[in-house]
Structures are given as C-alpha cells and as structure tokens.
Length: 138
Image (cartoon, rainbow, N blue to C red; front, side, top):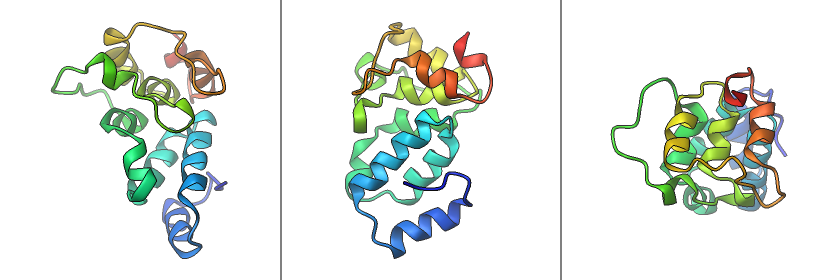
C-alpha cells in the first residue's frame, strides 16, 4: 500500500526500486480511487505502465481519473464504460471519484446504471462520496 500523500515521483521510484509486485500496485491503485485520490492513482498508473498494470485499465479508466471539462472526441461504447478492471473497478467508478463530473456525465449517458458495483459490492455512490466535492453525488 502506498502513501497517497507522498510526492508522485517518490511513489513511482519506490515501485521500481523496491520491485513491488504488480498485484500490490493494482491493489494500491484501487485503494487510491476508493480513498478519493483519483489523480494520485492516475499518476501511479501512468508511471508504472507495464505488465499487469498496463493491461488492467482501458483508456476510459485512465482518462476518467483526471478528466477535465473537455469531451471525448469519439462516442463511448457501453462495453467500454463497464469494462471491469482490478477489483471490479470500472471507468464509471473512476469517474465518480473525480471531483469534475464531466467524464461521469459522458459515461453515464451510455450506461445510466447507478447500481454498478465493484467486486466488494461498492456502488458508484460509494466512490462519489469519497470524491473531493459534492458534484459527483448530484
């Protein structure tokens, strides 16, 4: 488990130097999203893109963690919005943890199901409640 308050380069370097197993990295990414730290999880995922980490997330998992107000140029497919990553994490869960709701709105337009649950039965509202701000809950 990583210290999500640590500077991003320290966490990324520790992963490489300590040869942390891929499963531990994936578990930590999921915990970061659940703890309302989607941007920190994004940077770890981006910096450690190899092995299991690289194949566990699709583009929408990745972009939902740091999505600004811009829209995706292509149409999001329902299957992409519901792709299950580690611990059942979907792009919808990642977007709910992001305080900017634009990605959530776009993903929700193709998959309007608020009861999507991860492997531990945490629903979208659980992730939105951990976000910094109330926008995802609305």
